[in-house]
Length: 146
Figure 1 (cartoon, rainbow, N blue to C red):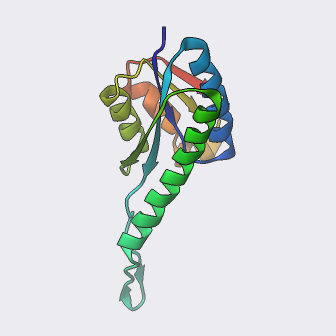
Figure 2 (cartoon, helix red, strand yellow; figure 1 turned 90 degrees about the horizontal axis):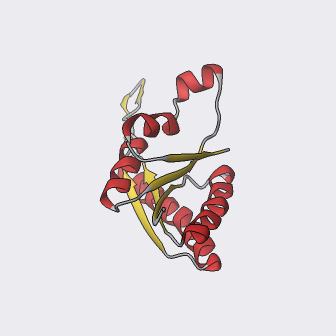
């Protein structure tokens, strides 16, 4: 039924747990996994008393992309150990949910399997929920893991 699974990862322990579940899910369905990790661009230029403080945005983005590759390498290793075909994608957006939805469409995925941190109260209000945003912006089934 499901042949192309999109698996977003942020490298967190919860994402690693979701990876193990997604690999088993893919094996049951004879599917492949498309892993996506979104590196968010340099967010702002902070100000100080002396004027603008401009950290090296290029170094920042290079480090984030490197971290995204590392997160995807862990998913690739889990897929290889489970005998599941894998493709990794690094996205770049201020809004990770947009990249997740785009990647699912671009790679013809049948389902999105993703972890949810399960934030409640003010944390949910202020930090938002990428899982909630994905659910609101895709027509694909979404398997949410905790």
